Image (tube, rainbow, N blue to C red; front, side):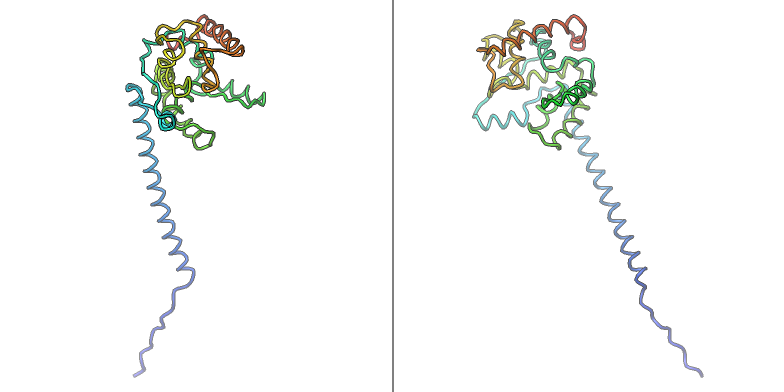
Length: 249
């Protein structure tokens, strides 16, 4: 009888091995992508919940406020609702910081284009962007913060009324070293309340906002006096032309 032929065992070709490794790598990448998307979705939901919470609950503070508390040992701050803030203070801060506040959706594109065209180094941040930074983020000029700031800005514009944005801003802004919020600022500078600020006092407080540690509303320089007069004119103008309508002013 003829002997049975033995089948030769051949090693797998290199192509088959590479294909298997590629398939396993692709499967791993799909799982990683799936987990990343799930993680991103969870982060977005948490951020949205945070924003919705602060629509009705006064923010207890922000990262910068906490840093200043640890640095100084104490800070001054007292939350006041919008109906305890003089309307002229609201109009003054809009005139000083964001004259088109009632007209834009969080980003003043016309102002951004103007700053770029002029080659100016000053920023074009809106009150919405500043509120997002003060409440949810930290201070500093890094791209990661700016990206996050843009996301939070869009969310608060979508889910907060304009009046709420200004209310939170005025209660979170720094007006002097360790002095946060318009109520604490009114008492520190003028020994009065935010509800009883005069047009001049309101304009002076708005004038110190770009540089609160370097400007003194109670002892203004000539520059600050000129800036105060300009803000008073601007506040009166936006009251007349309707650009304060979104906050009832």
